Length: 295
Ligand code: GDP
Image (cartoon, rainbow, N blue to C red; front, side, top):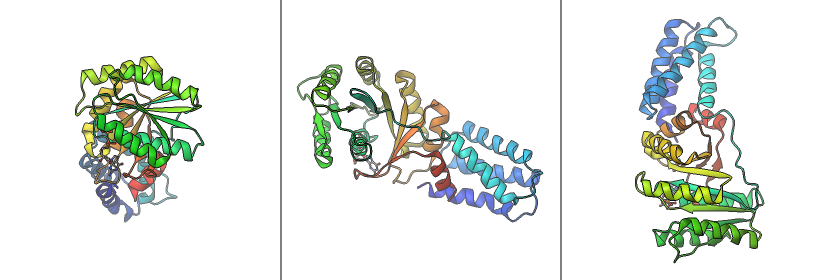
């Protein structure tokens, strides 16, 4: 994951690590390399610039501290700023309710259905909850089948109404179903499109108004880099979602989405998904991610 970024950052630190003293000159050189590495990882230029300006100010401010080596000091400053950029501490999922409602939104192919099932599995096995998966994609019958197959794999019931073309009704009925079957959390997998589309947004917004979700999670393919960030902005403007899920982190992803989304939409990344298997879901910890990026 983010292998290229990690290598580039390592090389950015190389020179300053060999120096005995931290100076304006070696700070400037390191910061410039870091900025280039971020931009090449598909971080938006404005974000990369603001990020490295902060690093520079921090480093200049701490220049007089001689207890640590310049290299250690720079790595520490960059790590702290990476953590801050990705949201600081982890953000817990709100999953209490009768039932708690979690709405899943995103473009087609982003990994919504796979994530919905992984989340159900996580809530069942790690949180001891009794989830109900809801297939509310009224356009693709195959999406219902896909969710059913996954539901079966993880032993979670799937609610669907194949003949009903009203996603709001399906969601409302699913809430009733959950209550009658003692399910304490429902995960609604909505329809996606290939691009941001007014009809899709209206539909998800209507489901939101009808079932008042505890969480609206926006699912995005991390391989799409800056596009992921633009899509996040479009969904957030319309849905005011509560959190982000980054998928396909097992792929050849450069890191831009992970580093820019929180900054752009001011919403936390809550989960990262890294595979097609049901247990490849992790809570997002900015601290751990920063550590991984730094290698
Ligand atoms: P949806 O259209 O948003 O519901 O997306 P799907 O859940 O159907 O996922 C689209 C494709 O991406 C499928 O082939 C999934 O198996 C695959 N996929 C989903 N999440 C991941 C992931 O984290 N890693 C990888 N490698 N593939 C994924």
